[in-house]
Image (tube, rainbow, N blue to C red; front, side, top):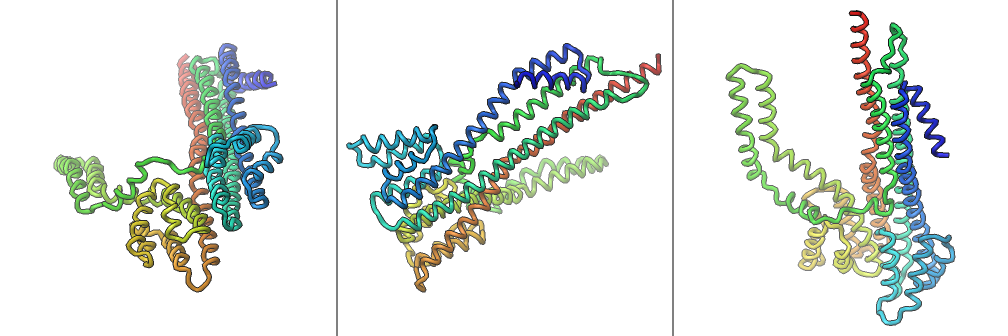
Length: 461
C-alpha cells in the first residue's frame, strides 16, 4: 500500500512541478528508498511512546500494590498479573525469578529491581524502587512517601504527554509547511505569460528534484523529534563541568575581569581612532561599537552565565528537594540532607556539601539554609529553604503541615522548570517549520531568474 501511495505522490509532483520523466524517475527512486526510514522513525516513535506508557502504568500499579501488600515480592506478582504480554511483563518476570531463586545475596530485592532499572532508564523508577527497598528492610510509615511519589509521577506523566501532543502537532505543521512550499514552487510554472514554459530548463528540473529531496529530509528530521526517549527526556546532564559553573560564578572578580576587557578593547579602539583620522565615519562607528562590546564583555559574559545558571538550578533544585522530601518522612532534616548527597544533581553537589558542613557547625541556626545558593538570590529557592528550616526546628506543632506545604511548593517548582525544559527541547521544530519556506524561496528566486533570462532572450529574438 505504501508503494502505491508513493507512486501516486510522485505522479502528483510530476504534474505540479512539471518534471520530465528522468526527474520523475529520480524522485520516485528517492521516495521509495526514504519511505523505509520514515516507516522506521514512525515505528520508533510508537515504541518510545509505548515504553513511556508501560512505565507509567508500572509505577502506578507497583506503588498501589505495595501500599496494600507491604511486601515487595507480592507487589511485583500483582504487577505481573495486570501487565499485558510484552517487554515490561518479561522484565518483571525476570525480576520475580531473581527474587524467588536467589538465596545467597543480602540485597536480593535491590538486585532484582536493578534488572528493571537497566531495561528502563528512568529516574522515577529508581526513586520508587529505593523507597520500596528502604521500607522493606527498615519498615516505618510508607503512606506519605508513597503519596509524594504518586503525585510526582502524575505530574510527570501529564508533562510528558503534553509534550508528546505538542511534538505531534508541530510535526503536522511541518508537513503542512512542506506541502505549501511545493505548491507555491509549482505555481510559477503555470503563469500564462507569453506562453513561455521554463519547466524544460535543466536548472529548473534539477532544482525541482532538489526541492523534493530537501523537503523530504526536513520531514525525516522532524520525525527525529518524535522518536526520542520519553523516559529520560527530563533528566539533567550528568557532567562535571556543570558543577564548576557555580564555583566560577562565585569567584567572579569584576576588577580583574575589567582589566582583561580593557586589553581586548585596545586594538578595536586603535582602529576606531585610525578610521576617524581618515574620515571614514561609518566604519569608525562599527569599530567603536566593537570597542564598547569588548570593554563590557566581562559584564555581558557574567550576566549570560547567571542566566544559564538560574535556568539549570531551577531545574535541578526541585529534583533534589523531592529526594529530600522523601527522606524527611523517616529522618530529621539534617540527616536527610546528608543522605541526599547520594543522588544530588551535579550542579548542586558542591552547594549541598557546603550546606552539610555549615549545618555541622551551626545545627540550630537558620543561616546555613538562607546562605544556600545565596549568590543567585532566587526568591523561590530562598522561600523553600526557609520552609525547610521551619521543618527542621519543628516548632508550633505543625511539622506535618509544613512538610505538606514544602512538598506542594516543590511540585509546583518542578512542574514549571520541567515544562520549560521540555519546551526548549522542541524549539528545533519551530526552525524546521520555517525551513520549507527557505527551500521554496530559493527555488522561486532561481525560477524567476530563468524566466527573466528567457523573457529577455525572447524579446531579443
